Image (cartoon, rainbow, N blue to C red; front, side, top):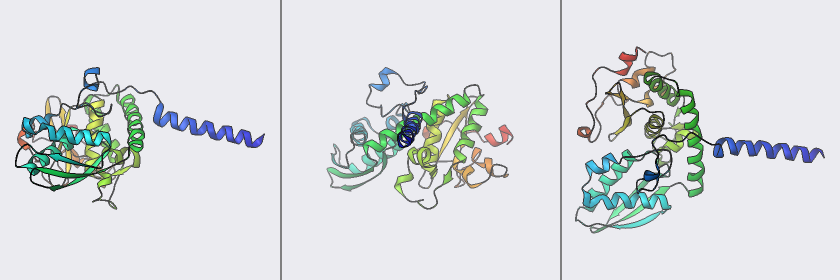
Length: 286
């Protein structure tokens, strides 16, 4: 009898754990619609992408490469051959790669890729998570977002921005695996509690959309961060900065005004709104 009670208790604990972290009902992304769910842009319920960078850094006759990459990742392929319609296959693929990185922070299975240029085609190899890990990872993140949505429900935009900054900064910077592809997605941030700038920026982007704050992902060759909208103007938001300082440090909120590489200009700078010279750190007086 005692063994049975222990077994029942153990099953109840396990059942509660899985329900709470993977199957508990959530508020959901407020921007998600049936039309978007049925579109080619849909990956999961974490994020709604307008595919802004696809439309602005790629030519229409190269869209198929972008769409093929997303399709390959969604279907779990580890390798594929992509034939090119024009001679400059590598350039088109690179543009697609950057565009996907900026357009789809919710593509948590996609960690990195490598390719061999064959002139009229590319042999592409993907480093991705498995489908089961992606499924449970996505559901886990949905429930993390749900908690944030409820906690920020009655906050002002200023309070929401500071909340996300503090929320992200509580995670640890993954110094051990700084150059590992496994920490380049929002998955590492939400499920492992450690990440690098790419994970922090993508997590921030997803969180902002789900709580009603507009933002962009920004990247250069060394770093990734966000531009966030506040009262109709755009400002630098670099949540990676907060991970290096305790909250009462004078430099803790430096990420609301500059990036860790000391440069607020990323790739494709002409595609972003004008960034204010006055920083959020100054405006918020933090």
